[in-house]
Amino acid sequence: MAIKTNTEIFLIIFGILASILSIGCLYGGTNIEGASWKLESYLSSEENIISPMPETKLTIVFDKEKASGTSGCNSFFSSYEVKGNSIKFGPIGSTLMYCTNPEVMDQEQTYFMRLGSIKSYKIEGNKLSLIDGNNRVVLIYSKN
Image (cartoon, rainbow, N blue to C red; front, side, top):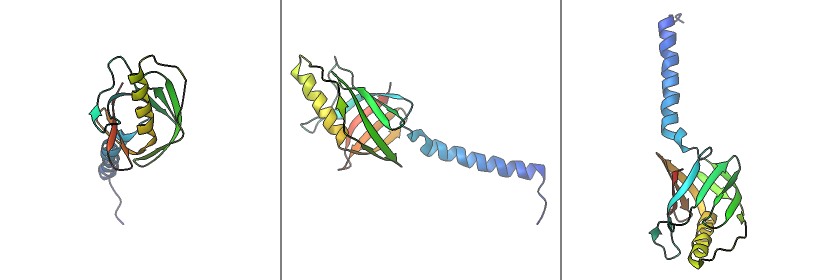
């Protein structure tokens, strides 16, 4: 076995690090933790992609095994588990504020229903898409 020169060793280490970095660029941007996500659009109960009502803010934050956020009227929380690009939420709990606008309450219920149906996710740039069991993108967020 030939003894490697410092230059050869450096090139080997550099090649390994470059490979790890390129894999991180391809897949490392898929970490949902550590950011607040604001809902941009969702699949309505009528099966149309729509934006949330202007006077509402729907968000989600993933922190270790707990997800929490706002749902337009209430705050919510849930456990979640990620394996690869699969994600599964536990039961969703929320505060019990009453919203005077029935449309806000309907939007919130649809939001909770969609969160409960999520099976996978993908991140592209600053966009997070949550995908249901029928492989439909049902919630689309941007980094807040």
